[in-house]
Image (cartoon, rainbow, N blue to C red; front, top):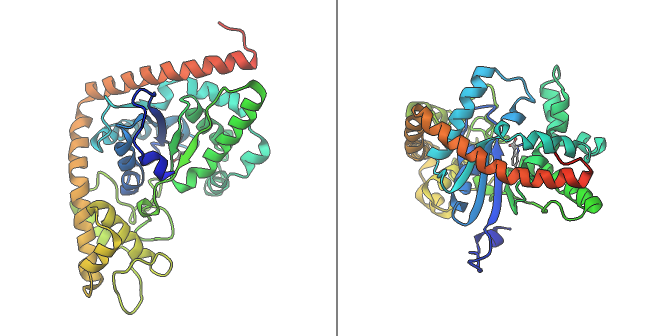
Length: 346
Ligand code: TRP
C-alpha cells in the first residue's frame, strides 16, 4: 500500500486520487493525532484530493458537554491548519455541516447486519466503558462512518489500526450494495501508517495515546506548554531492565520503543541513528532529549493554532467553504443512492 501511495501519478491528466479521514472532537488533539495521522495527511495534500473533517456527529455517541464540544471542534480545525493542512489545498469541514452524512448513514443502516455490527471491537469496548449509555448511535457508529467515507468515493482512508475493522465493514457494505444496485460506491482501501508512527501512552506503553483518556498524564496534547511536556516525559515509563540502554525492542522494552518512535518521528532520524546517539548514555540523557524534540516540534503548531483560533471570521470562512465543496460532492453520491433504492426524486 505504501508503495502505491508514494508513486507519483504517472498520467498528469488523470483526476487526482481521493483521500479522506476524520477525527472526533471528543478530546483535545494529541501528539499521537499529529505524528500518527495529521502529519501524514499533510504530506499527501499535493498528490491527492483530500477531505478532512471534524467528526462531531460521531462524538455524541458518548455524552458531551455542549460548550466543550463546540469549542473543541473549532480548536481542532485551527489545529489542522496549524499542523500544515492548507485549506486551499484540502477540503476541511465540520461533519454536521454536510447533512448528507446523516442521510446516507441512515440508508447504510439498512445494509449493515446486526451480527456484523455486534462484532465490532470498538462497540464492545465502548459498551463496557459507558455501561450506563449503550445507545443506538454507539451501535450503528460504523454505518455513519461508512457514509462519511463512501460519499466522497475515496481511494484511500488513512486510519489508525483501531479503525481498520470499521473500514472493513464499509467495504462489506460496498460489496453488498453494489451487488444489488451496480457500481454505486468505489471500494475504499484502509491506509494504516507505518508502525513507527503509532504513539503509545507515556504511562502505559501497551495502550494507544488517546485523546479521550481522562487521566491525561501519559498523554501529550498539541496545546501543552513546554513545561508540561517536559514533566510528562520525565515521568514516562521506561523499562526496568538492568542495562538501561536505548535499544528498539517493542516486545521487551515497549516504553523505550515508544520514546524512540516519538524521537525518531520528531527528528527524522532512524532507529539505528537514535541508538548510536544514546550509546552508553542511559535513560537519564534520553528522556529529556525526547522531551526537547517534542517541545520544538509542537511549539510552532501551538503558537500558530492559538493565533488562528483568535480569528473567528477566518475559521468561519474556512469551514463554510469546506462544507460547500464537500456538500457538492456528497450530494452527487447521495442523489445516485436515493435513485437506486427507489426514492421519488424531489
Ligand atoms: N471513527 C474514527 C475514530 O474514532 C473517526 C472517523 C469518523 C473516521 N468517520 C471517519 C475516520 C471516516 C476515517 C474515515 O478515529
